[in-house]
Length: 295
Image 1 (tube, rainbow, N blue to C red):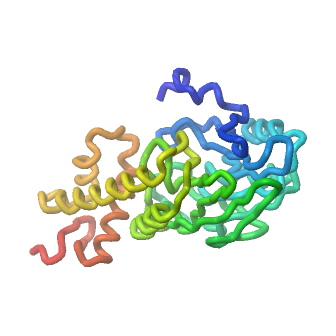
Image 2: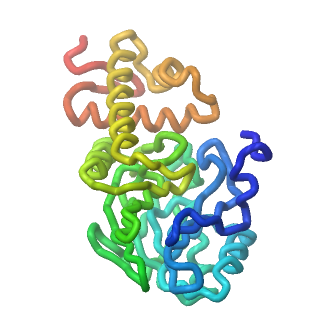
Image 3: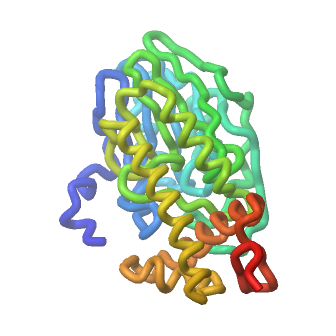
């Protein structure tokens, strides 16, 4: 990734307006998994009482830029979509500086030796209040309502900003790439159900944590659902062609994808296989997979 030539390269360290009620501060943690970095969102009228969604990694420079950018404003809530290490670890430092309440997803700490985009789960996360589907926090001129969207992680929440018909989608829907669904916590059936849930909504815009806004949400989600169903078909076809291990499937299915992403792609393939196994379409023997009823 050539950061110097990417428009986001000028955004590090500065709150950028996205709408009358939304600003974004980009953390300088670019990677093949985070794109140009983690987007921390500030919701509320500038100069007033605001909420911060996903304060980001525990990077002192990012935290300082966020605190400086909020000078003269009151932070009432620090809102967390999920507890991966590029999303929530800055919450304690921001709370110490502002006195805001930490609210959002439930704590979740798992030991996971597989490839992660974000080095695992945040063991320091300690919310003052856990939100469930449909619960809200509010300030003058804004309301954020939790939308439970398990799949990427079991504790993932999106947040709807009613005043702008906007949805902050965390890592459930990203503006630049598909989402990694990595077992044991990531679950493909849950992820697909959560996408279907978003299809039934009438949001006008998505603000993902990574990548640009999504301005045609329903069409975009329909595309994501189709992409995942196509991947499922590819998995079944690969097994039928004798590609019976995940490594063999990834090499064929992701031949045009950066090989640094292949381990994470393997986790998504595993998530598809687990889902297919539950539905009685495939079985496994050790590292090998076969279609149900195959000799």
